[in-house]
Amino acid sequence: MSLTRSTGAVLAKELKIELRTHDLTNTVLFFVLMVAGLFSFAFSPTVQESRRILPGLIWLAFFFAGTLMLQLCFVREQVNDTLAALRLAPIDPSAILFGKILANFLFLVVTEIVFVPIFSVFYNVNVWPVMGQLLLVLFLGTFGLSVVGTVFSAMTAQARMRELLLPLLLLPVLAPVLIAGVEATSELLGAHPGIGREWLSMLGGFDVIYVTATWLLSGFLVEE
Image 1 (cartoon, one colour):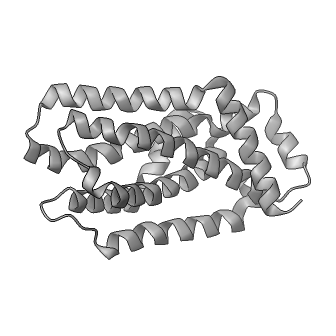
Image 2 (spheres, rainbow, N blue to C red):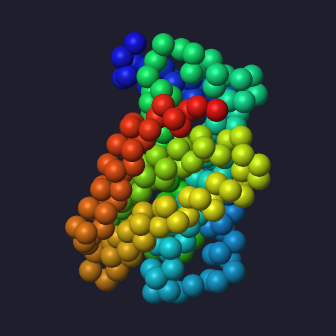
């Protein structure tokens, strides 16, 4: 089976499981909504203050929400030992990781599409004029989060205290994504909206590097 077809099969499996259970999306949606509501009522910022704090809040909320989602990425494969069955299947090991990466990316994208307008309303910041550029930044950053998070989820699935270990490992590695994402979002929400090419280059370069590394190391990452 080709890499594309086997990746699609793994992706379809992940989507079917989520459509039946809604475990991941419900957890992430509830978390992001709670963060947006609590901080909005706690600070009641002015429009100018909102433009300063909203970029960091959005990216931190999605980082921790993504961490919650990625915790279960490989853990739920242990229930019926389905990961062993996937390894025995006649497919490239990278297809397992790429299928899960795409599934996690889609789940997070759905969350962002729903909650970016909610953040905009809660903090009284109009994001519609720059929505296209903002979604580009969010998609690039989210893809990087999905790639690195899925890889580390595979590495820590059987580790002790994995719930604590995963965010501790992810935060230093994803620092370039968070910095570039916050800076690009801040520029878009500023007085003169625009995106510096350096931030998009950082996000795109990060994605390319880690996708390549995942493909090269996939055989080791899916081993027990």
